[in-house]
Length: 465
Image 1: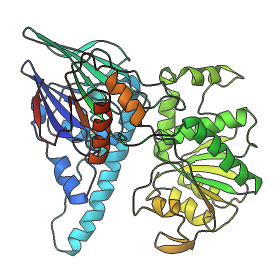
Image 2 (image 1 turned 180 degrees about the vertical axis):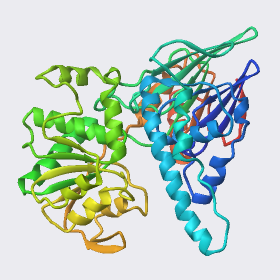
Image 3 (image 1 turned 90 degrees about the vertical axis):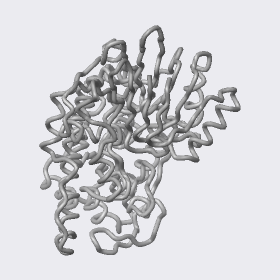
């Protein structure tokens, strides 16, 4: 039995781990590597294995850094099942289609430059049509349902609490007279997040592949973020302004919508119009509404009270689909909340809302996630007095508010608890999906608690288990 670490090794992107067992190959995740354009293109086009020789794929969740290269895998010859939860199969389908569209746009942008230099065009890593072909291979599973991906291996998908449908993967392996339990954490969520159930801790594991994204960070209580959200929105409404929220289309948008629903229902906020203005976010919200089996007990209780049929629907909420409806919002001046993509304000409809509202001091730009350096979102979070949008300079007169504590990844405390929950049996833990500083901090924390058999593998490394 062997593990090959082929992605998200000493980085936080491109999750791919290949399991060799009983002469078969199981691929855990098939994510896109996201980095410098040329590096990403080469890495994503070329697999470190032959796709047609893979016997089964198990997908932990729908985020593109975990699912995003499935269209290329299928395009390159893979014809087997892709096991995942029902919600992940539903969500991944729309996200892969969106990714295919972005791949086409990216290739078009690059080819304009290449044409001017007299260079031949490049093809997109995959297209929307390629992405559409993936759906036929999804093999949706219920949480905790036992299935057999290859001979000698039984598997279960177990709640990870990260995004809708996210799961850890438990593999019970029999090879000859040897029996082992391998656990792949996928991305580990947090306790007490809006909407979703808490992650389930591993038990009686022999070998674990575990994420460590925030192995060096201690997260704030999500309830504090809820209180801050209400404060920011409330004071903006009182002064007659708009709240513009650049938010990731999947996960963060739905969390914000549900939190606002609770506040309006409890009378904590004056009811003003709320708009979700992002095609992907609208489609993702449809998927969320279709899978209440993934919601936590608090959300289900909220839905059962006072006639709430859905956590993501309320009277003053509108999901915007057309460009015309989106443009019309900028012709209105009354208080409202606009939630729009992209989350780092680098593309999408949110740029138009920022352009039209950033110079009005009554308005607020609400930053609800980490912003990468050099993005417009980071410049706003840093309260720069001037920003450029669509090549034009704008004076930032709107308030900028930032809310931490909404990360969907476990922080150091829960990661430590996660690993220690299986210390009586675990022989080896391999940390993935994290930078060196985060991994080093978590390794140190686990060592303080007596767990020393923890490694941080490099890309391409193979280990026997």
